[in-house]
Image (cartoon, rainbow, N blue to C red):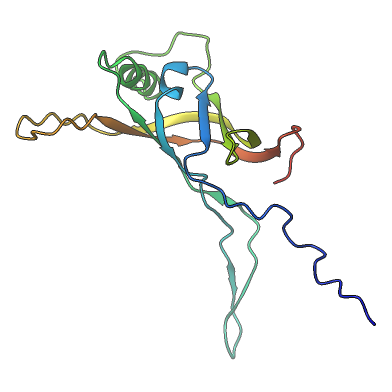
Length: 172
């Protein structure tokens, strides 16, 4: 009797990834890291190149990888320390008030740890040379009778991201 080899290449761990299993750390701003509410692993695309043809244009794979922005949603602390730290970082990056005379680079590394169902690290996503490009507004509203704690979104640009397994080996 022939033995089936259809199991080769199948996923060994059949547990599903939970969206609550993550920890984010921003090298320069640990105060933002502890109260992160949501973060996406950005999408990646390679635009196609259209090749003209007298009968029908056709597409071939492009040669330039495009990464979407990294967006982080975090709770605002009552003293607004995390919000103002990102705001000041943005102002420094954009030279809003003065020339940057500080020798400290504006870029930092952001690390996202992905956790399994037991909250153990299964992999990390490292974003290199990250810097903020947008920070959401603060909206105060006295007509809201429920206490909904305020959040903010910050958008980052970065040079590249890589995914590492729990041993630190690059897997993507």
